[in-house]
Image (cartoon, rainbow, N blue to C red; front, side, top):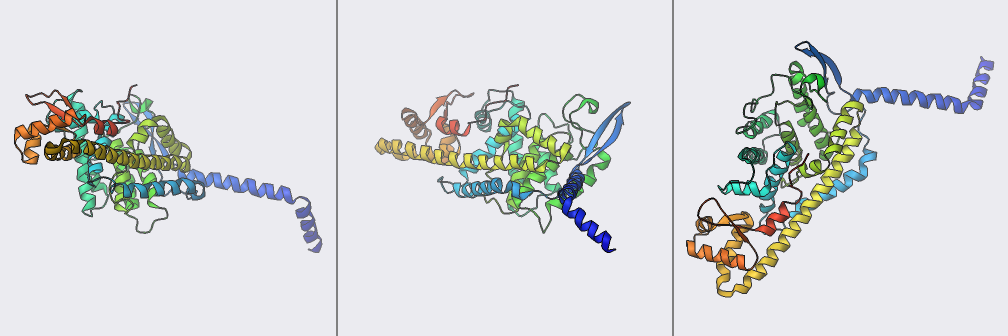
Length: 421
């Protein structure tokens, strides 16, 4: 016994490095095996004689746990940017002004990712009962997105939880008109869908089959409603977005609903007072990285890589919104200074300017109705603004000319150019 013990001590001393090396290798192997628990399961399916593999994601949260040390700096920057964004609503004269335009900008951008060509100007024209410059179906699709988004915001502000029920309500509105209206609006799919390719057999990704769909969604909803959470809301928002996109529960509209979930979840958790954070512009400008990061989560369990990308997007998006708010505020002040030089005509011009801040494309008729002034007074006020260079006039479909607050629209339209493939 004693000799054996001495031999063990000698061996440990002489070959301690080797023993440590073996232990580390074994630890690495165990970690790699554990990392595989983050991965979902591929199951073999077939349709019309062709087989394919569908993916069932592992439930949230990922195991092993997210490496928060790696993400610490990114998380701090994102939280700081969100704090600035929450304060940005105080920069403008009307705290709802940024929300009004950002909801519409988000609708345009998120719909562009899905293939529409509508611009923000097209949407504003459509909402003014004027003809847009792109196919009407594109603008109807964007308008439906605005309606779905506003419905979701109203429900969340009333205290209704982000849930499968709310998701279905928004989806029903989103696909209520135009393209997609025959894709089971408001209903989870009852047939297999896929991403990329012409059929499941040559698709780049096939979500869970229908017989596994409700199980995945039930687990997803339970995670939405956890009372005790292991991660901050920002981390969870990133996890939830990927999980929803991976489940892909609808035949159409998954991307648009999945992007909205980020903002609604942060509102529900109290991280956003005003729902002014929309990541579609970041995802649009970094489309390839976005798809690669989603694929890496499914292929290798690289949640940290996705969350680094996601938090960078939150930081950039929030900072851009703050910069836009400051630029809009400066524009309003500069134009108001010009209006004050009109002397006796400045009062009616200032009222028209206030109206234009809230609705960037107007006519003399609409200005008359909103401000309660005569049509000649409204027309004179708008013409005065035109002479000052505050607005430009454009042709309308009716007899009335339209006036556009072009500098405001230019600020808001940055980044909304249609995607060219």
